[in-house]
Length: 111
Image (cartoon, rainbow, N blue to C red; front, side, top):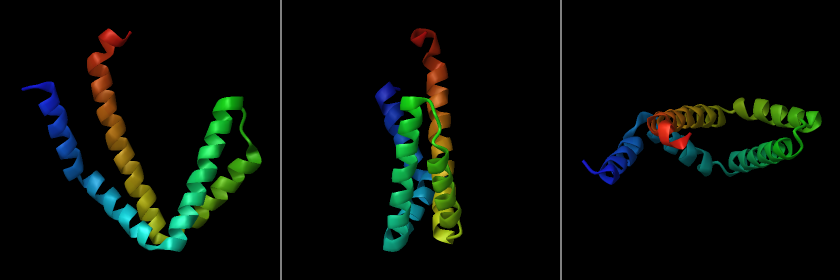
């Protein structure tokens, strides 16, 4: 079998996986709730800015970190947001596992 065929088959199987389907449904549900969607967007923006600053300076902004934690606590009190975070985490684990498997398979030429 051709490696491109295998990659396309993997892509199809990912789209049929429970993790993908649940994540997609959680994301669609979130998008229907405009207020929650905006809160999530603001949370993601704050988290992204925090991560960038950490990478650039190597230092943690405790005030910003506390703000993000408080935003997260508030968000997960909402069942839709909680379901979204759980689905997102499971999907990200699936993708990370797949990347790890591929990485290990080609490690010898990457070193």
